Image (cartoon, rainbow, N blue to C red; front, side, top):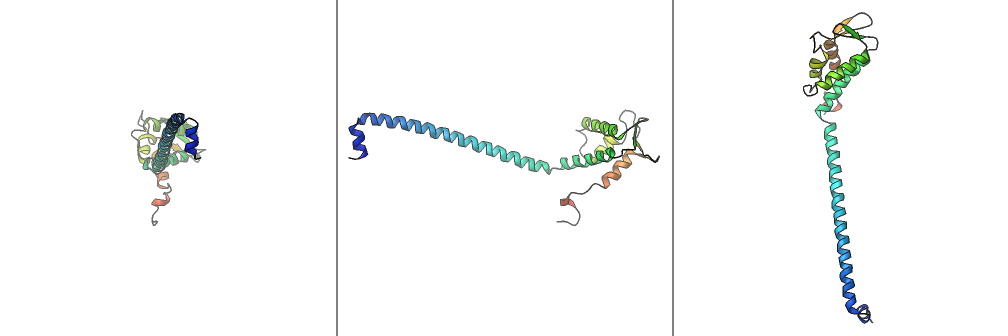
Length: 166
């Protein structure tokens, strides 16, 4: 006796109903599995897109300019025994960096390059127009603009843009 004959002997009409119900359950499971796979595909695509945008963003010119500006600010922060003179008052390096960061934050829309930062934020008072000065421990004084331009000229070139490399 085969499987079909055995099932038929046990009430064949019921077998059709069971099969239809089982097929409906299988169909719902397949639909759920498709939904899960589609969601997984979307999550993977979004993840790949984010990873790609992060990679592109990491190499963007804006990030390079931000790094150059940070390099300038680090230079001021390292001038531990110098005074930053603004509108006739002297400030230590930490206060100078905090002030310049604040000006940079306010001017973000118009500061695109490190040169913009020097010209629009780090050279002179936006209130009085007086140039910012740096007074060193040995008594020398120079304009902040001269200091920043000299420091920027020493900024290390990225490996991909270094002369003589292909």
